[in-house]
Amino acid sequence: MTEPKRILEVQTSYDAWSATYDSDANPTRDLATVALERQQFDFAGRDVLEIGCGTGRNTVWLAERARSVSALDFSEGMLERARARVTSETVSFARHDVREPWPAPDHRFDFVLETLVLEHIDELEPVFREAFRVLKPGGEFFLCELHPFRQLQGKQAEFTDPATGETVFVTAVVHSVADFVNSAIAAGFEIVRLDEWRAEDAPEMSVPRLFTLRGRRPHG
Ligand SMILES: C[S@@+](CC[C@H](N)C(=O)[O-])C[C@H]1O[C@@H](n2cnc3c(N)ncnc32)[C@H](O)[C@@H]1O
Image 1 (tube, helix red, strand yellow):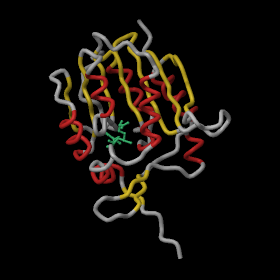
Image 2 (cartoon, protein in one colour):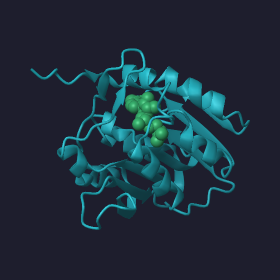
Image 3 (cartoon, helix red, strand yellow):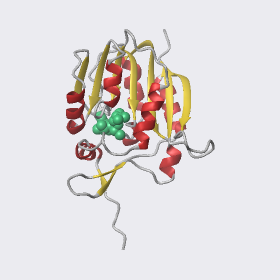
Image 4 (cartoon, helix red, strand yellow):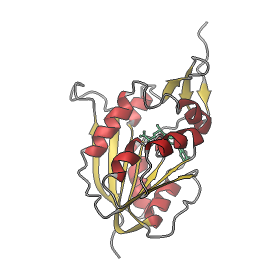
C-alpha cells in the first residue's frame, strides 16, 4: 500500500524547510531568479517591498540595487536565514502574515515584488489591494509564480524534512493565470506584461514552469 501524501501547513513547512531551502536542488527556485533578473528593472533610488522574502535570496540582490528594501515573511525559520544573509542598513525585515493588512503606510513604495509565495495564499484580491495601497502612483508590482498548468499536472512545493527524512508537501492552492490578472485589475492595476518561463533546455511548447506578471498603479 502506498503511504498517504504528507501535506503540512505553510508556516510550519517553511520553518522546517528553512535549514535546507537554499542548498536543496530546486529548478523552480533557480528559474525564478532568472525571471526576476531578466526584467531589467531600474531599482536605483527606489524603495522596494518584498513579500514572502524567505531566506533573502532576492533581498540580497535587491539590496545592492535599491535605495531601501523592506522584506516580510511569516516563517521565523526563513527570516532567521534572511537576516543572517543580508545585513545592509538599507534593508529591514519584519515577521508578518501578508494575508493581513501590511505594516506600511499608503504610497510608501516604488516596487512591490514577490516570487513563489501566492500559491500558498487562498485569496489573491486582498494581496493586490494591499500592493496597490502601499505603492506610489506609477509604482510597479512584479510577481513570479509556479505556472498553474504545472500544478494541474500534480506539481506542488515539496521538500525532504531534515528532521525526519520524509517528503513533505506544502499546502498550496491553484489560481489560474486569469485569477491573477483579474485580481490585479480589480485592485486598480494596469497590466504591463505577462510572460511564461521554461528551463533553457525544455522544448518550446512544453508546459511552462513559471509565469511572471507585471502591473503598474496608474498616476492620478
Ligand atoms: C517558496 S518560498 C519563496 C521564498 C523567496 N521568495 C524565494 O523565491 O526564494 C515561499 C515563502 O513565502 C512565505 N509565505 C507563504 N505564505 C505567507 C504568508 N501568508 N505571509 C507571509 N509569508 C508567507 C513562506 O514563509 C516562504 O518563506
